Amino acid sequence: MSDVRGRRPPSDRGGMRPTRPPPGSSPSGALRPQRPQAPSGMAGLSGSVRPPRALRPLPARGPVVRSGTFRLPQDIAQLIWAGHPWVFRDALGDRPVRENTGDIVELVDPAGNFVGRGFYDSTATIAVRVFTRDAAEALGPGLITRRVRDAVSLRRRFVRDTNALRLVNAESDGLPGITVDRYADYLVVQIATPAVLAVEEALLDALEAEVKPKAIYMQRRFRSLAGDAPTAATLARGTAAPVELEVEEGPLRFWVDVTAPLSTGLFPDLRLGRRAIGGWASGRRVLNLFSYSGAVSVWAQHGGAASVVAVDSSARAHARARKNFALNGFDPEKPEHIVGDVFKVLAKLAERGRTFDLIVMDPPAFGTGGGQTFSAAQDYRELVAETLRLLAPGAVLVAVSSTHRITHEDFDRALAEGAARASGSLRIVERLVLPPDFCVAPGFPEGNYLKGAVCIRD
Image (cartoon, rainbow, N blue to C red):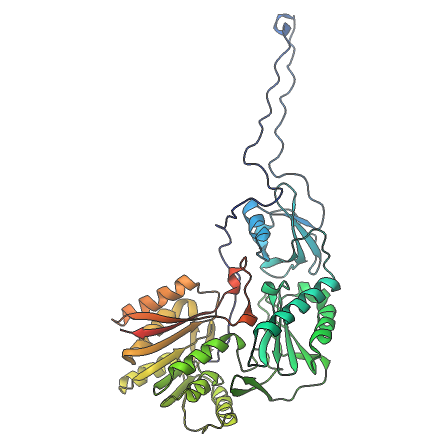
């Protein structure tokens, strides 16, 4: 089962309350119009005289908005004001939508006050991605250039010891729906929505000017309501990259393919986690589940593991892992590579009485292999329980999840309930976090998607 990381929009966008209301928000109270009184003496006049009709209260929705503008509910407007970059389709109200994908739209609160400006997408659940909260800032090449320059500058200041890193982290770098990863002298751009294709050329120009790569590859990973499949990366600028490209991560090296449709073969977001695993591996018998291209296995071997067993549903992934072992001067046949469904392999290892001192589990959000399916949201507890059958007291479990389908609280609960199912318990002794190139804007908690824990089995 290859390690493909999934993401999805959050299902709950309420509950956040800033310490002060956003500028221009409506007062909590509302003046009630008074019913007019009949003039004095009217009752004594002969005939029937109808008093003036009472004034109707103004509608609570505020002023009528013009085309290209969406009025948001107050709680959603507050979230956008505080930095959240997504507006979901169900927050746009029931007015007829005449906007097309790629149109620039403005967002206002119930009183008509400006909240943000972004690109509209008619094809996805995320209907608007907010690029600015400054009413005077235009969505054009200048904004794109500034954001790219700032993002690259941050990485130059804080990222060391690798040439495989994220240069632009989408929403958290002020460029929603756009990520840029660097692998040596080549860049891979991922576009998550057709709404931002209007700035594609400006983005490429800014990257060429700031980074001067040998080539830029473009991958359009649109997540439409129809569920389109991702396509292979295409060459957008420069000269074609080799099929196998060598990158560095600290003292180790790995092969990547920048043209691959799903993953290049190395996940930069788990860089700190791999280093931590290397530090825990010395003298231990290591079992690496969902091993993919073997980056974790190589780090474990580098850290002095007594043995390494890698499990993945893909024989091709194991072939790539062997090449990564050889690239770092290790015997590619020394690790035991097992092809198969993880749950079935765990059962067989338990039947044979195999035990391990360190088990790493980093499953995909959703995957298929060997006729089986795995869903992190549903199956993580069971995976923890089955894994603990192979861990003796005092042994180490490194559990990782990289999907929005599991929150940080849900992740810890899955560890606890999985351990309880196995009649055991765990204690977390170290947390694994995103590296600085995967920076997170505080108003966008979904950006902090990586959950990782080093646990000791009691």
